[in-house]
Length: 210
Image (cartoon, rainbow, N blue to C red):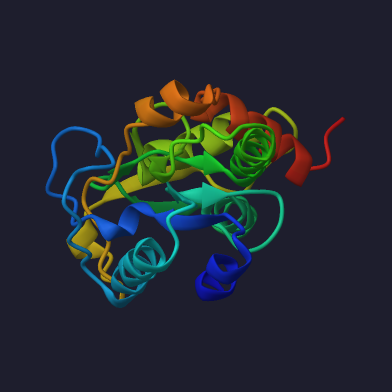
């Protein structure tokens, strides 16, 4: 695709991930921080970034994190389903990141696309976009039910904290993958919403609350 776009002189907006980082940072990652993916998924995304950069100068790489939305399979919808099925949920509390609403990301892509079509002064390269604020999967789960329980009853009675070691997965995940979004705000004027605000809107859509 990048080769085709290069021949046709067409820009690309490419979606990437926080999983290109290893999670060893103590502060939100900036675009120039060295990448060091832990697993196959992160490595494949990092390779995609590198190949795009080598082929096409007119590119925007958008790294995002902890993506959720009304459609598809994602953490928020999974928690709501489990909340109807189980009284006790156990959720990892030692991984930190920035939940991102898919609709917000889509709007950012549309905004950047519009600016690309109207300006010859685009600063191409890699940018970070995610919800504003850092949390854990456990805190995110608590917030999900704080919001959702306003609209319907759930079976779940408690959400217990567990460690990553207590919840092994095939794919290694970074301990800390928060992203710094200052650059996209500076160059494109993109508004970054607090993750709690977007989460509430999404849950209302999922539960079909007017």
